[in-house]
Length: 260
Image (cartoon, rainbow, N blue to C red; front, side):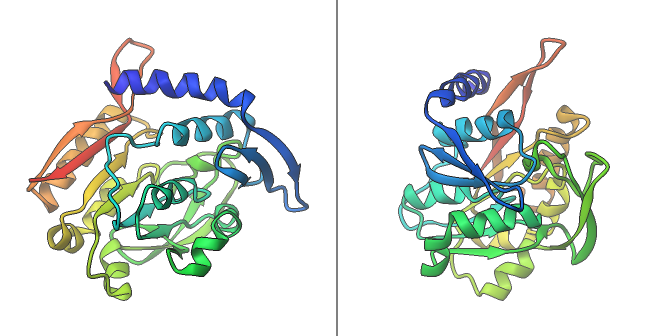
């Protein structure tokens, strides 16, 4: 099923050539695209291929195995340009808290979600998620800003970012409800899950964790499953989006966790 989802995404990426186009680039290099979402901003340096893949994912709901219910409160960890947050609000979520640490992406979120941010349906936390408060270098993947990482070196450029824990932000915001957590944080998943122990135990939210773009994807899947079992042993897990490796292995790139 996960491999079928992967092939559907690639087909949707090709279809996006008929539904999306670059409108203009501003003086900072941010790109405005005409898309099915609406006119949508992407960061400087993002390649056309990476933008079209992003559009394809969200045309297919991005995480089709993660149910969004009317009234849900959602954490979007690794918000990129706000596309998934936009999708969950349209799906009926009442509130989404977006974690994003990269300056270019933060600016795009502010432009793309100006309405929900002003209305209080979306909130932006300009930090990454981790297992403690820390300042680290976010290494830039120059033609694919969705792949920036504090764990793996992506390229010669980067920026200093602030990291925090999910538990700390949940306490600061005084959340009384939390239904869903999505993580797409490029190798920081295990550390972020350890920093969410209280939140997972208290609210038992449904989880989607992207495990791709690490040096050993299969091992990262094992490590993420082990981390969830350690901090919240009441979850079961299943595979989402999968890819076919060069050695013809079916490799999970998304894991879903459901509370028992």
